[in-house]
Image (cartoon, rainbow over all chains, first blue to last red; front, side):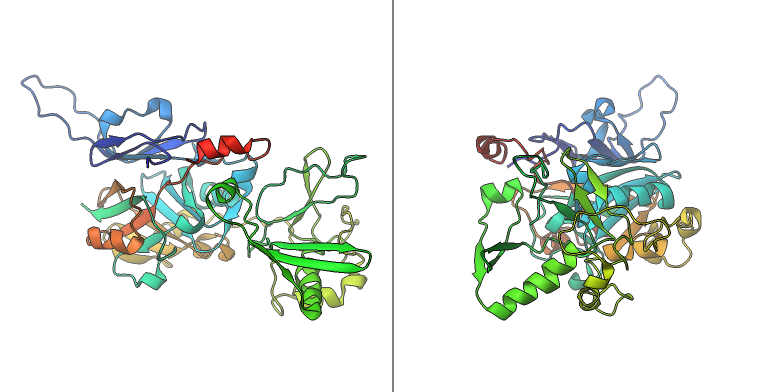
Length: 169
Length: 257
């Protein structure tokens, strides 16, 4: 079974089985290692830090870890997710966002939240520049290190085929 | 039921006797109750009624009748009655497909299906039913706009711009690890009804890995695989959402396979 959306995990690209929505985004989190420096010096490249990319701007060969999801909740500082149905649904929600200073913010709700309202909160009060819905419903899970299982957000017995893992550098 | 509404109410000759009210409130107010009444006979069924395409294709939906008369009355009055009286969160569907929010406070005292007994003045189901007549609205009435001067239960609230202050890592943040801090979303201006939390991560001190396993490990299994993980959050896994209305069943069988 392929994932809904494309991803790059540990340098391996896994093509998704759908996810053609126009409001999908990539969260590219770990850039591929620079090739060894050759004899010709060149301008140092800007380090590729985690960022959100539109599908047209995403090149999988540049990233070691990346994932695509939908809908975009915030784009360029403006709340999105204005459409009917999915954006107006109330369900448990998980999201990833980025602030102006480059810090990344993860969000998960234990109880239902309307995605459009989460988007507005992220943009207007948290100050997110970009934000992306990760998953909702029973799969919405967020667990912290050394946290008792019952304190985590999410169902303990729910299968999670794709996860975003944060580790220390 | 849980699902989008594909029905157009109020179409002359077709659905002029049908009214559709949508409520999205803090407790996911879809009670999944079927109520039928004809010739003075009431039938009430409870059902899973999680009417999303994936469930029609992959799961089993079940309904069963409630036969005890007193239980029927309680369900009709305390659950359906409360929801039909909602004048805070309810939206009324027009024949053109447009939803109109019922003005908070119309039909008397604001009442929301998401309130609990004793939680807010006049908002709990018991209080709600006891003043239903006084509120001037009967279950199923077509809503209208609030009268001038009517009380506004949910006047637009301009929440303080707490972003910079909140994210400056003073209280209410709790450190998980260097560069990784967590806080309740409600403490940052988020809706307390979400019962949500956020984790703020400094990419200079932490990195993000994407991992995929079609065998669908549980969160406990992921934690065992990555004991050094500071945070694990679910990512997009299931098939995308597509418009439900007008899709033939064969489309969903193909798309969900």
